[in-house]
Length: 378
Image (cartoon, rainbow, N blue to C red; front, top):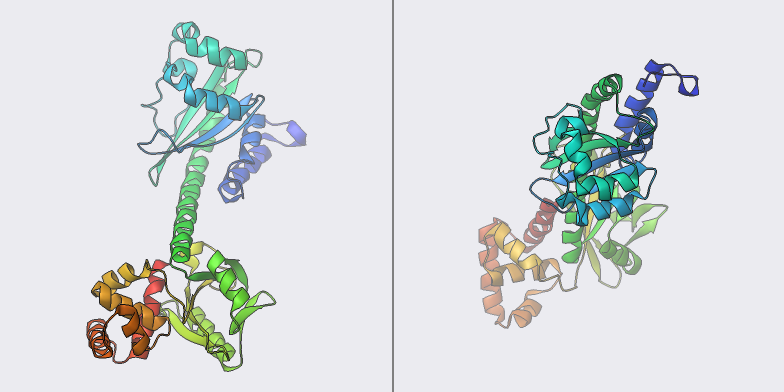
């Protein structure tokens, strides 16, 4: 990176590369924009980022820019030539720059099937490797290659690349943290959907930024709540209550999840649970917190998967948990008794036990506690 390209000095180019490094983990396709930049400034025929979960041989994430079909060659290496590769990468240290010749004798490399059958057809004569470290149990590497015409990577080039490694290390930390958040968000969304619970993500102004399938179905079919101008819209007093809840949750970082019920003229109802969600989604707006709103239809059978969760969370038996869940569905004790196959007296006895175990003083409070427990997902 000696400078001169596009009329920029070496220092200006280095600043541009560093800026691109910190932009890379935030992009829609992380690292994809950085690989060609590094390939250009290093005059390489290929640049590759590789992220491997610790202790696993599968699950690699590879992002590359190359003069050849990298997807084909990467698959070929994974299936065949990684087992013939004579180069040992296991003892590489974080923050150091390694060439082929630092890891294996040149004559040994040139005699290997790995070189003659894999490297040579791709014009890989020279290569460098940098171990970027382990973050959140993911190992990260940067590597580059050149053909014979470009020659080996010089000491000056090695020095320039080494100077970028601290920035790459911090960028990988950002990437690992974001990937963990994205993975957790996907897991939470899948779990919530499996329980028949809708999830709506809101920005700090209350505008919808994401929904799951169950939420889409609820909002499309239930009269008491719908989408209007990109926001959740309820009827009359329910809308005022919803606005007050958003204001309370937004103003108090320690606020507990808030619950309310929206009721349609038909008697159908939707339970809403509102809580802060920036730690779950990473979607906090610059001018306020982000929210997650859980939607659960009343008078509809809940997913059976909710029962063991409620039982474990409140220390209930399976029958008691079924009763608690059916109460959140809006069923009366007479209906619950029929579903449980017990007398109304037995249903009342179960209900009293549930109230005692949960600390609720009445059925309405029990329903609120059960609904609020779902917010533990976030």
